[in-house]
Length: 121
Image 1 (cartoon, rainbow, N blue to C red):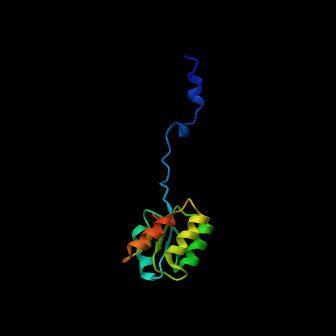
Image 2: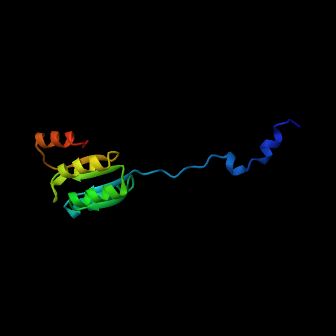
Image 3: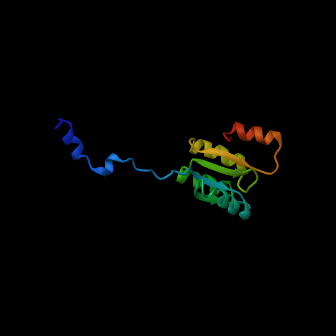
């Protein structure tokens, strides 16, 4: 009997076969003052992302990001509390690891540049 054979016999079967890990979904916060948009975002992105909260304005979005530290925050440009510009600046300062994506139907080029300079992508 080869010398190494006893080592194989002592290893439990379950540790030999690789275990399939559950897929990790990125954590996200949604912020928009339109409840329909929040519902649609959660519905459309719910399979790919874990929603840790949704907010109707900048203040709530900032608080959610600070407490949950999500991977991603999706922010509407125009919402109460200073909109995406204020939220982007605060989130970028308080949770720099959180990626910030801006959602809007209409922007001016200047708004887009200012948001990107504040930390949005």
